[in-house]
Image (cartoon, rainbow, N blue to C red; front, side, top):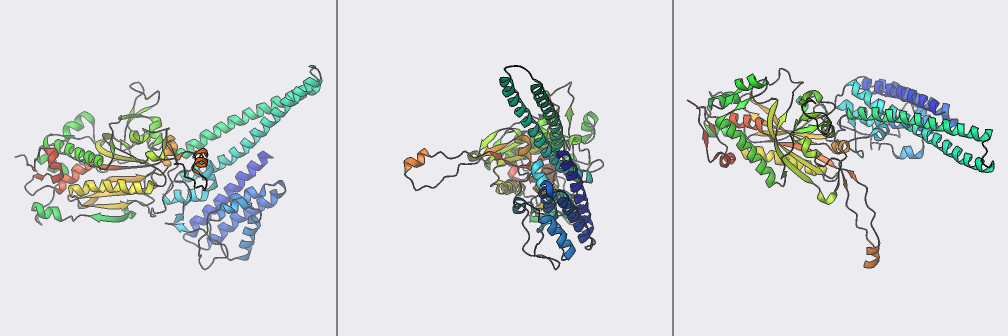
Length: 597
């Protein structure tokens, strides 16, 4: 019976999902197809309900179906409505109470039941955690698929989500099967004991038969346990390949051209006016400016290290160090604890922050013959986000200790595997660069507030340097793999007359924390009582269950790209560079970097 249930369950789910996918994709251009896909999916569920109603399975099928179908447009067609009703009639009250809330109003084709509202062209994830496990994914598969499509995910990624739901359904059946086998084994073992006592130790045919039955049940439980382990391993691998769900505020879009401008700071003509730029002056690229100062030496760096490596010398190297020190001091003044972390991390650490397994080609891997991290593969860090966030991996923190704020200046190493031919000139995209990283570990309730605080701290770095910038909210097709919501800060570069990213500030929700087992214990709620102080003292408050932390990270800022912005925005027509006022204490009071004659 379990096997039959499982096979029909998979067949019905796959048929339903295909119908739903057809309806969702075709309805965007041809509204008349909404009814066809919807009715097909509903009919599949209804037929399954009728076939299995005598076995008590109908509610399970119709429950799964009603969740999926609730996200499709309802029509006023009587035959479509009757099909939906026949499936919904068998749905348990528990499933209906947990279904997604419907919108308050519908279009002209609405009936008494209305579809859930779309937020930025996708189903709202309100009420769901920012990350999902196998069970919550299965229970909310339409929402997960909606967010994956909003991210413009590949068909393979959508298929992975569906496979997880299928595997989880099989897992539920196998757990029941294993438990039944174990129960039979235990009952047979107890029966053998009783029979042995009744027969005064003589092993009768009946005892041998019961023993055989117990052994068979034990073997069945062992085989089922092995299959469960295989399923768990496969589900975990597939889950690791799925990106975070999106915050409802993230706009829908294909790529960075559709990111949303939130704000803009500074006048791009203010510094040129102060520095004496004329209409005829053509601002130089940062590498030409640095070369005029005698501080650019890319040829020797390429000769010893290969492409996308640069060597800075003299005043330009000193200016880079001044920028780093300014950023660290500013972060410390905002309450961040400075950390000097390891630059080599394990595979587990990178899996925790979700650089692995998806982005292994972008990492610099250390050969095992040279070094391993506790027996694991070792990698150079792509960002200090990895060691800073992993400082508390596997721990249970107290809510009173949150938020935790860290900052670190480190070199970052990136293979830039997907950027061949892009930004090959200068410091915009190199394999090695310095960055001051800001990381916060927060509670779920303060997550959004801390994300905005961290972003504001990064903005203040640019404002202190008086570099014009704009704040962009990344659209669904551009937001990073682990982020549920991300702001990019883009600095003005006069050489090309465009804004370029200089910081990304991401709220990952509990996405990273779930992977690295980082949790906190909520504070005990104070219970009001009319009793006296003694009764209050004797009453012990229930200890809250630990929940996953939320992690936030951002550049405060990328030092190399900030150097680019300073060199370009503060150059003079004579070829000199004026040192920004906030950097002069770090440059020994030096105000101008002179062009080398």
